[in-house]
Length: 157
Image 1 (spheres, rainbow, N blue to C red):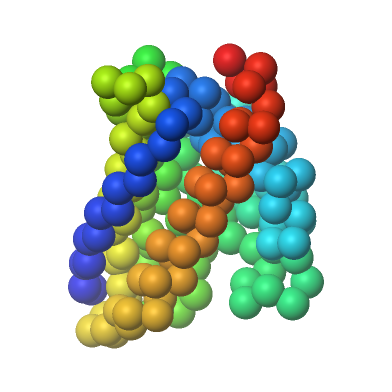
Image 2: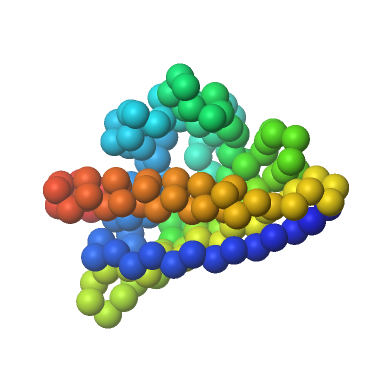
């Protein structure tokens, strides 16, 4: 099994607490409303949102995948750290683990770091296009939520 790790950073003018609440804690409600062209729904299959919770993300018809499942490993509302693992994946991956951290910046915004660890089956090589697709999807979600929070300054305060 091969293991590949990548880290991305993203700066935002939104404070970490607001971004964390919207993008992580309430994602199952907010993301499908803001991104209906990509996400049909996010269902909580088991748990209360904290560690051990299983979420299923259902994509719109015509997407590359119909759905995927995430297992919540850590949800720390004090330090704004979220860890989750994509499970029940296609043939190439055992799992993909994510660690997302939201840190305050001196200007009142946040520095956000996402570390992705891909566990591939056997000696399968991870393709650059797989990495780029994942990065683009994550950044797209950040941008959509950030735009919503900028337009709605009283949301998730």
